[in-house]
Image 1 (spheres, one colour):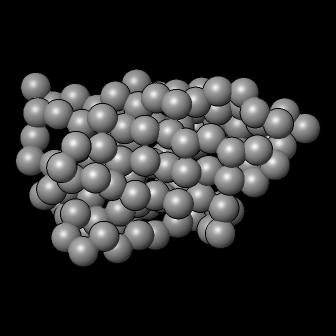
Image 2: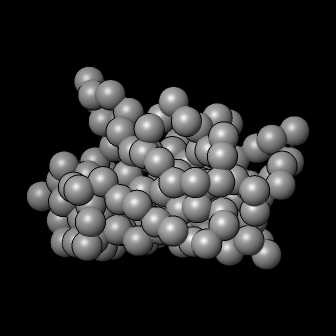
Length: 124
């Protein structure tokens, strides 16, 4: 059974940091890109970051470039999202997801098998 479990969210003050983790199982982890998405109340789900399975290529949403870093450890089937200099507008539920393919994209339609989500709240 394919499973992704995301965790590490919490409440942090603006300017603070959090590291989200995604534990994957049930599929060939090193064959798939993994992405992080977020959804704030009343807004559509948006892609935040993605990392390829082949060469570690990464892409980021413009709103998080320079503040967030995605990484993966294929030996542990884990993906991480280091979030620094957090802003109140980063408040959302964050999800990790498995891409259909190995290449990077931020389009939600290119992903399957989502985690359950972890809440990130940034206070001003």
